[in-house]
Length: 292
Image (cartoon, rainbow, N blue to C red; front, side):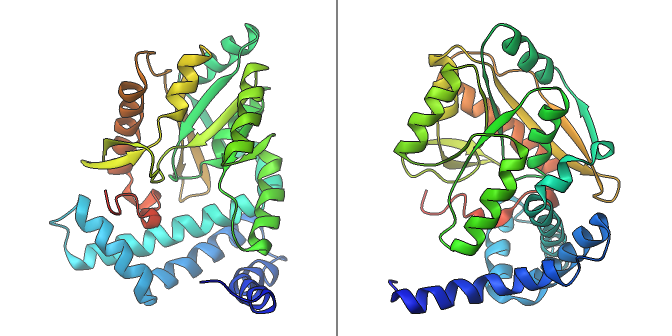
């Protein structure tokens, strides 16, 4: 639907106001308390807002067809709490970056990034909308490196302005999807830069690759670039631990360089296993399998 400019501005303000209110009225509280507060709010939304609940039920039934309704409802509410905390932390990424005590960093992938950097090469870190994905770039910074990111611009100008400013704190460059962003990404990688990409969104021009047991249209771009520029492609995950106040940031070994489909399938399998272990930490409202 196309709105007149004045009406569009009003709609953008109306959409953004609840989040602005939630973030503004709790400024006096501690970081963790504010994070928990927005998490509680989104958990309630998942419980009482029918469209969100229906969409969640549709996707969770696809993967867990035998899950009882009460457990589905509980899982949906917990996902809301997790995503509320993630949203808060992303909007306050500058503050998150300073909380070094929250990060437990492990896995061979971080050493692979360092080795590539010493050799004058970049790297491609792949993850999904799981746990706190910005914790991955924070962990990279703690190791003396910096990762840019690919993101999809928000149509709401208020959300867009705030989230773009916030995620720049995690590392630069921040590149939008599309042809212009792709050209800048190639330059960044060829100059030895690191980029982080979330690969769990539906990509209409992608390839059908199993994800959580069902074919999903998946982009091959990360694997294609890794092969073309001889870069490590490293799956990484920021898993919430300790009641959600800390993160186990795991950098897996680089995916063996074979072909784009095989490499992307390896990533899908890795993310799937993480989600099956912690289903409440994945954002189930992505419409991952729509019209596949």
